[in-house]
Amino acid sequence: MYRQHNRLCYTHLHTELLKLAATAPWGQQVQGITVQTITNYISRPEVRSLCLFGRYDRAVWRSLYDQTIKRQRPTHPHDFWSIDGTMFELYYMATVTVNGKETKVRKRLYTYIVVDAATWAILGWTIGDSSTENQEMVFNAIRNAYYFAGCLPNQIQSDHGSANMANDMVGWLSQSIQYVTPAEVGNAKSKIVEAVWKHLNQSVLKPQAHNHSGGNVTVRTEDSRPSNDWLKANKDTLPNLPEAIAQINSSFHYWNNNALIKLKGEAAATAPIERLKAPHRAKVLGFEDQVAVFWRTRYDRKGEPQLYTYTQNGIQFQQNNQTHNYRVYDADGQQATTFGSTTQGKSL
Image (cartoon, rainbow, N blue to C red; front, side):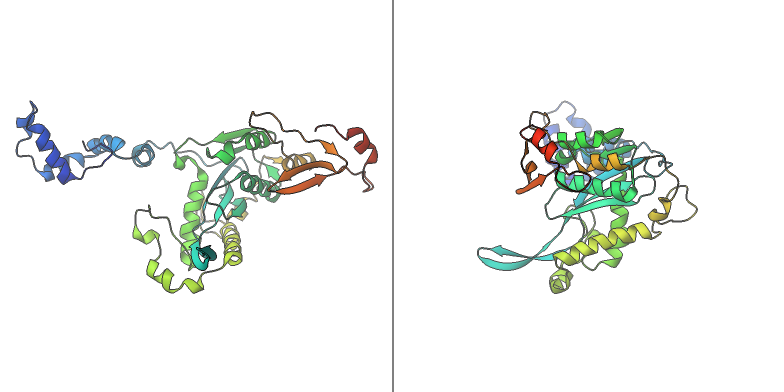
C-alpha cells in the first residue's frame, strides 16, 4: 500500500491496513499494531528502498538508490565535451501585454552550454528566450565552442532532447566528431555538465547576483530560493533583458577565469581557463573543418538530405522566416559566372 501512486501517509496507511486485516487470514498478526511501528518498519533502509520504487517516479528512485559508477576525469582537455541547456537562475523584468494592458513580470532566459569534462571550462554557450532548447541554440553553442577551443573533441555527450537527437544535429556532429553519445534517459548524474550547472549556481550566481532566482517550486529546501517578499519589494532593481544577457555572459567568463572549484587530483583549486592550457590530443580545427562546422546538411522528415536549387541568386533557402542567398565567388572576389551558368538549376 505504501508503494501506491497516491502516496498514503503513515496514519492513513495504518487505517487501511487494519481494514484489510479485518477480513484477511493474517489479520490476527497485526492486531494492536501502531502507526509508529509501521513508520519504524518502513524507515528501515532495506525496506524503504523497495517501497519507494513504486511510490516515487523511477528517476527519483534512481537518484536516491541506484548504484553510481564513478568515472575517471578525462586526462586531457577536449577528450570529452558535455552539452546541456536549462533555464538560467537569474530573474529579469519584462513588459508583457495582458488583456490590452502592459504589466511587468519576472522572467528567466534559457541557456545552452558546452563544457569540457577534463577542465570544467565552459567553452561555448547561447542564450534564448524560449523555455527549452531548439536546434539553432544547440548548433550555435557547439559552433562557438569549436571556434573558442580551436579544435574538435574526441567525444561529445548530450541528453535525449529532440533538438539533440534530430537528424540534422546527429549528422552534423558525426561528420566531425568520432563519438557522439547520448546520456541515459532520466539519469542526470551521468552528465558532467549537470555538476557544472550546480557549482556555477552555488559559487557565482547565488553569492553575487541579487536577482538569483534559485530553483523552481520543486526544490527541496526553501534556502534554494530567494525571499519572494524581497523580490516583490525590490522588483525595480531587477535587470532588464539586455542587462540580464550581459550578466549571464559575465558569469560564464567569471567561472572560466577564477579558481572556484578544486577538482579531484588537483593540489589546489585552478581556474578552468588555466586547465585548458594543458596539452591535448584533439584534432586542431583546420580550414576544411571550419567549413564543415559552418555548413550543415538539413534532412526532411524521411531522414533524406534536403537539397537546394542553385538559382541566379545562388543557393537560396529560408531559415527563421528569413531568406538567405549564398553565391560562389572567384579568388579575385568576383562572382563566378562560369560556375553559376553551369550549375544554375541543379540541386545541391
